[in-house]
Image (cartoon, rainbow, N blue to C red):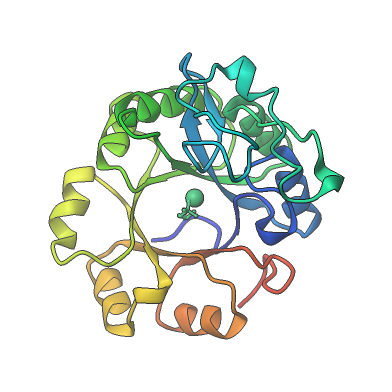
Length: 243
Ligand code: G3P
Ligand code: MG
C-alpha cells in the first residue's frame, strides 16, 4: 500500500539548512536521507522553482513576489543568508536542477505543488511536465498539494505520477475528495490527527502521510497508529531509519 519511503526530510534539510535549496538537499543527504519533500512554485515566465512563500520577506530579503519575477531573476536571489551567513549567496534552485540532483543521488521526491495564488493549474501542469520527462529508471515520485486544482492539472499532464491530497484536518468527505482527485494518499497535519481518524483512513485503503513531525515520541505514536510516512524538520533527531 505504501511503496514510498517512510521518513522524509522536510524542505530538504529541515532545521539544519536553508529550506528548498540545493544546500538543503545536500544536508539531508549528509544525514543519510534519500527521501525529501520540497515546495514548487512557478516564476513569471513559467519556470518551476523551489519556494515556499509566494512573496519575498522571509527567505528572500526585500519585497516582491515569485509570480512577478522571472526565473533568471529568482535564481539570482540569495535564499541562504536569512538562515545563516554560512549560506550567503545560496541561490533559489529551479525544479529542474533539484530533479537532477535527486536523480543523480537516488533521492526520492515528494514534490509539493505550492502555487502562488491564482496560478494553481499552470503550476500543476508545469511541474508535472518537467517531472514526467525525467522519471525513467528512477523511483516513482509523489506529488502533493493543498490545491485540488493544481493536483487535477498535474494529473491531466502526468496521470502516472501518484498524488497525495494535503489538508490540515482529515475531511469528513474523505472518500469523495480522494476519488475526485484520484489520489493515493492523504497528507495531513499530525497535530490534529487522532488514532481513530488514522485507522479510518487506512481502513479506506489510502496512504497516510503526516507533516511535520519533530518529536521522536510523537513520531513513534503515529507509526503505531498505522501512519505510513511523515516528514520531519529534525533530521538530527529523527533519522532515515527511525522506527
Ligand atoms: O508537504 C508537507 C508540508 O510541507 C506542508 O506544509 O507549509 O510546510 O509546505 P508546508
Ligand atoms: Mg511543503
